[in-house]
Image (cartoon, rainbow, N blue to C red):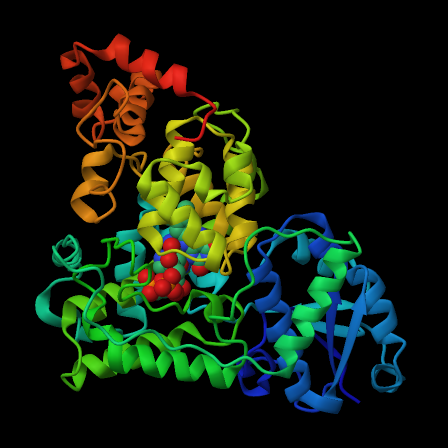
Length: 513
Ligand code: FAD
């Protein structure tokens, strides 16, 4: 009889159990474990806890008798119980060697757990386009010079024959980013695109909500954020509907305003597919192949399709591999020696305490949905943390807990590297932060704000503008040596009001901006 196979909560799609692609035997009994200690360890966004539990329970319902679904305190306890279950026990009888298989988990902690338990065989990772070995080959061959995204992305495109005409990129250019940095349309509150796909909740969601209420009431776990109607797919069928809806109705507009922000339209043309991708409900290859097909059929322009393909076949794969490549120490990096603890208003997602309209708006989006697109994450939330010198490990933990798509592997490179520059430039060539002028240009958030993006000092000084200069000043020596920052640092010399600016930011320190 085949060995039982253990499915983690982010391994929910059919490809994780497909024997034709290295998965377990088609008759292998399956084990799923809902471990309460995971929720107890940290204060997660409630919408995230809801989504993950809902998706796991939906999958268990689909798999029926084939799965032993255990609610336990820990994975160890859950495994003990599941392996003692008759369907798993009969499968193990008479076998020597490993008793259980599992696909390569997505966090180091889970991988260590699986590897150090006797009798567990770890199968290759699924849910990504590039294997560990192939990445190591690329990095080792000098493709990894500086391990930059652009080289990696082009290599993936060629290898997977994605948007290629022979050896050349479709349209002659690899990168259409410069077509994709348009500000939002002036005088419009929302983009003219079809609203995103939305699921309908069912009895499983109701049961999850009921359990979460009870655990909270019992003081067993504590959450942050609101658990409004579920917004993200919890099943394969829902995930495919969301993907189809995006490719048909929204992909054509994905590109040009990819970096723009509108207060009343937080999603704009983004796909909202990170959560189903990271739960394993969608396979990245099917997403990019469908996008390419839409382009080849004349249904979506190249700048949008290339932008989307770059996000998934480029960024998502790149981040996954950097997580493993950089090693365990990466999570403790703190090149800028930032140690300020996160303020309570930020930890509690208390958007109402914040005056700066951009930050208040974005924090409210996180509170209400557990999601914002990449620019609010990078240039509003992350930039605030960077400018104010918050402890990067605590910032990483915050993103992980508060975002529906947050997992260890995706958080570490995105926050430690990309957003907080805590790795000193291993991942990016410069810190990502800006003054209020960038936010003003790329959004409608500054108009109604009590601060002015042009003001560096005084009561109406924009916290991003003042914070930007204070950040450059604090790290002047290090940043002056960076050729992409040297000019900005020189700009400090022209600021006659620098002492006053530093005084303003110091006085405000600690209070919500
Ligand atoms: P779209 O804009 O529609 O992009 C399509 C897809 O590309 C996404 O669904 C996602 O799967 C992928 N993608 C794009 N950029 C990245 C990236 N940098 N890393 C990984 N995948 C990427 N993404 C997560 O999935 N989980 C996270 O926890 C996460 N944390 C982030 C934290 C910070 C500070 C920053 C700057 C970015 C983070 N991202 C994270 C990347 C990106 O912001 C989200 O993937 C994206 O906003 C999700 O919305 P979407 O599905 O509509 O994305």
